[in-house]
Amino acid sequence: MSSISEAGVVAAVDKELFIGGKWVPATSGKTFPVLDPSTGEALCEVADASPADGVSALDAAVAAQADWANVAPRERGEILRRAYELLVKRADELALLMTLEMGKPLAESKGEITYAAEFFRWFAEEAVRIGGGYAVAPNGAGRFLVTKQPVGPCLLITPWNFPMAMGTRKIGPAVAAGCTMIIKPAAQTPLSMLALAAILAEAGLPEGVLNVLTTSDSGGVMEPLIRDGRARKLSFTGSTGVGRKLLEQCADKVLRTSMELGGNAPFLVFEDADLDAAVEGAMTAKMRNIGEACTAANRFYVQRGIVGEFSRRLTERMEALPMGRGTEEGVVVGPLIDEAAVEKVSGLVADATERGARVLTGGSTVDGPGNFYQATVLTDVPKDARLASEEIFGPVAPITPFDSEDEAIAAANDTEFGLVSYVYTSDLKRAFRVSERLEAGMIGLNQGLVSNPAAPFGGIKQSGLGREGGTVGIDEFLETKYIAVAL
Ligand code: NAP
Image (cartoon, rainbow, N blue to C red; front, side, top):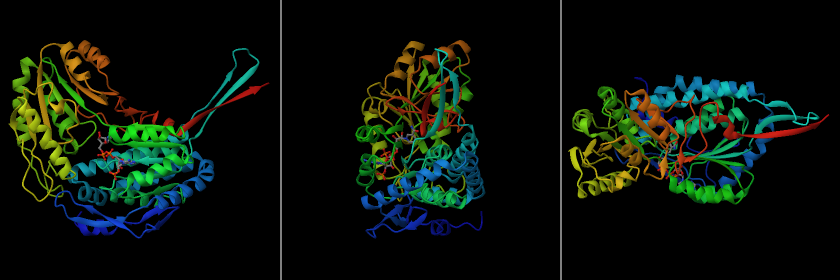
């Protein structure tokens, strides 16, 4: 670690666009700054792609598609495996880079690099397991052949909160399936993706298979590519609002879509739960990524008999969390991504307290520099508080008591979102009953973390369409072709 410097890791990144296997400046010559959210200062400038650069990237992805689809699955898998090894080897440098542009503490950034790398290892193994079928037709005369083929050139759009893992969760299966792609990282955190592109090139990914566009005009650059029709799929991770807009754009040329959208996770604690485990799980589900995760516990529903004790213990844990710049030793609460995020969290807390919620700890911004907000616990949060229906995306844990199982489930499901729900109970029958009734794509049962590259990640309702990871993740990048055979 000692040889790694902040300036060094930023300087090592290519800050141009990656198109057709080459680093090129934006045709306009423009750049935009990447800010450190813990200081508000610019770390560097990166190329600012225009719509014309977008078209060049699409041309490159389209030109590379046919040859790439013919590369042997084993070879595609081995490229991913090499990239996995490079990510693991350079985890310290990449973690520091991520902390600088995104703010999360170094230990969490390192955790994300490991998590991100695991998608490459997983899909390196899946590349050689793309199945097919052979069957006798019901009339006995014909035969059915079923095979899978790459969807074609893909557009990938990723958010700032997991700058590396949200990329590898899409790039891994796209590479394994034989698709070419254009990826557009969030303008706030482009450096991790640029570093990843260099690693994939070093691992042997052919020119044009992956193209990276950094831009301050995401809508202006991506909409023409979505509407062009040559890209056959959009895989998006981000907010539900933007997702809805992109789905409309995709309708024009009937693009395949995968949508990993917002969440509003309920965290249910029943009186029969192991309270130590529930508090531990609550800390993980709430504080991973400073609360800036789609899977973050957004609403805590705790059965009345234990709500006092649960709140006391959670408050004690939240109060003890060291806050500071993510690069400092031992820091757990880093800065939020920008000033708007701090304003949003402040507004939600103010709204809840005006409606009767009580602050057990925190509840304030922290004087600058940087976008800091205190780790906060609120209790007696009323149902009509805005944070019961909106993603907080910050270190705030709102607690509401409940009496019956039915009441808890109704409150948990009372949302347009359905990404993940957490349940803590020691009663096996209740565990299954509640898990089955909760409207969510994923359930954390006595567990505060569900993300795993080997599991199908995704939501129902307005949290999204499709799944990433697991054995189904690659299917999002494959078309099924059926060949009717007359014998
Ligand atoms: P966002 O504002 O929706 O942005 C996500 C991405 O979309 C960014 O790259 C953004 O680029 C781009 N974008 C914004 N407007 C666009 C447009 N009109 N056309 C094309 N691209 C556009 O979301 P965010 O604030 O970055 O991320 C937080 C959200 O992501 C939360 O709602 C969170 O729950 C969700 N999320 C979901 C998952 C999941 O797996 N379900 C995982 C992580 C995060 P610019 O920012 O550069 O404009």
